[in-house]
Image (cartoon, rainbow, N blue to C red; front, side, top):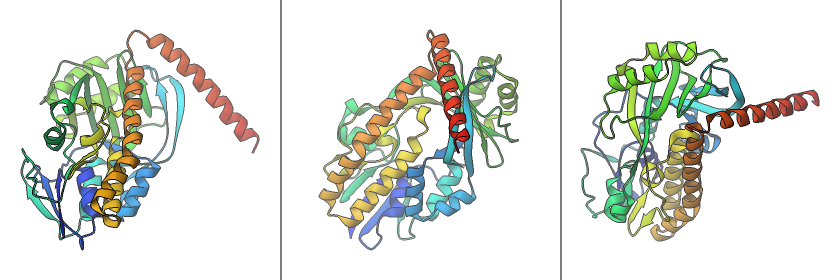
Amino acid sequence: MEKVDIIGGGIAGLALAGMLNPGRFDVTVHEQRTELPTVGTTLAMWPEAQQALSRLGILGAVRNHGAIIKAGALRRPSGEALLSMEGEGLLGVSRPELLRLLDTAVPVSVRRVAGRVDQPSGAATLTVGADGVNSIVRRDSWGKRSAAKPTPFLAVRGVVPGTPSPHDVGEYWGRGEIFGLAPAIGGSNWYASFRSELGPDKVDVAEALEVTRQRYANYSSAVRDVLSQANPETSLAQRIWTTPPMGRYTRGSVALVGDAAHAMTPNLGRGACEALIDAVTLGELLNDQPMDQALATYNSRRVIRTQLLRSASYAMGSIALAQGAQPWRDALLKQVGKRVAGAREKAETSK
């Protein structure tokens, strides 16, 4: 039996624990939380992430507890659509529900240790950092230069009762700020991002909600209505942090997965998806190959892809949160929207 210590029991950590062969690996998951979270917003599962959930054996359960994301639009603050977006094939599931279902995929042989890990023991055959953007494992093995960097942006998000109208679903792009609205099981999922001095560490949710209401006071009635219903008990607020570029996700007997390896801004909606794919890829390789070969293959499969997504997400965030270039950005989006609509109409006519 080879001993594997997984530091972090979030999406990536639970998924990896669920993939590793219990007949070969003696697995311990270290998680500072004593219970699974009860508050969290909807995550979009792209097709590749759904394949990862299938290999874990829980895709059917996720579908039963999720919602299909069909369509939306990029909008002005007034609600006017600039560019329609098709979401065919996307599956939305709340973070707490996804964590609960991933937890059911973990074999009973896996040991759970509650408490914060300030220093990896180094006693395991493999130590896996699944401990998020401010990873202790990354800092310990990659040094101070690998420390996470705070962005100027605050993320405030939550769930409110009621299903949004299809005419209101999408992202509202303003001057240096965005607001998103989408259907969720049992309500509406919303999120906002803008420059703020709150934080960067612990952010008071009630204070962040009040700042958000003031910031979006001139947005459409749909946005204002959602924010009027938001409360601290069903909302989250935190500074957005990112990791610096990395050329490898393994070093000796240490590997990184998820946000510990490639934390990115949320603008492409790929963070949770790539964490799942990391974990399932690494788990399958470790099950099938010798340790050194598995880690080398993991690097070759995951580093370039996720680093490109990290850069693309940052670029998209820069466009979405533009301040001075907003009029030109919106005019370009509107032209693109007209061309996309025309292409769709032509395709429908030719059927």
